Length: 289
Image 1 (cartoon, helix red, strand yellow):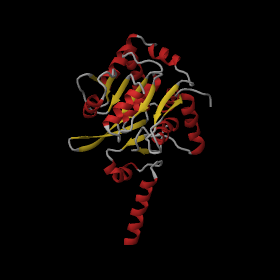
Image 2 (cartoon, one colour):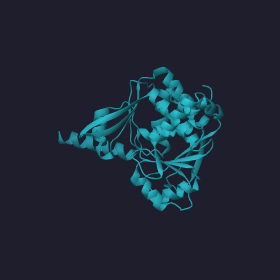
Image 3 (cartoon, one colour):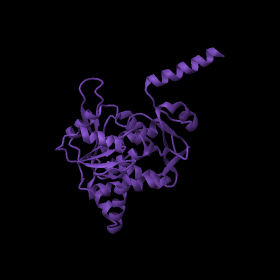
Image 4 (cartoon, rainbow, N blue to C red):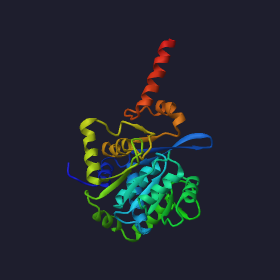
């Protein structure tokens, strides 16, 4: 396959199955469990609007944009928008203390930060260096001094309406050799480190997906690992784009067993300790019977 950008792969999949579901984000309304469903066309449109919105904020090609959020549909939209803009996405480990995350934002010289909710934003602001100058963007909710994801998308939509070729011009600047993701290691094997990965490297891995597993739009996967982790980012976010596999998001880890039963994923990635727990539960039930 020819070398191309991550957004180009999203565009390829959208061309094949624009109106099929791509992302399922759970929410509760009136005590009832529901899902916000994004089609592939909506996924692509969101990435375009976010990319143009970021340009309007002065965030350009090569600028680092951090993401401090649990794994959710809005994270995926923001991540693809950052990459479509030619910026570099750096996801933070949300399990780290808020002060460590604030220091990481400064260390990677982020120009903007996508934050999951107002409570997290308040903590980051309190822990951040007063001299830190970043644009704060909330994935959910609203707060003074920050813009919401929807507002960012609206800015992008208005700019595209005024200049229909604006996103095309932005895309023309982005090449497969450009940096795409700044991985921040968890520190489990020593001092935390950073590693830069290009679009070409990511897409080379994405293109290996169909060679390894025959998956497609009739399959499903369930995402719950932290998006800062390379396994979650590549296997549960980027590879499904290449396969065209819809991704369901968990409401909470406490409900993971019920989520698995509900979604019935045909493709699922989890750390060894989860498989051990599943095995132990099955073995216990067998012994009882």
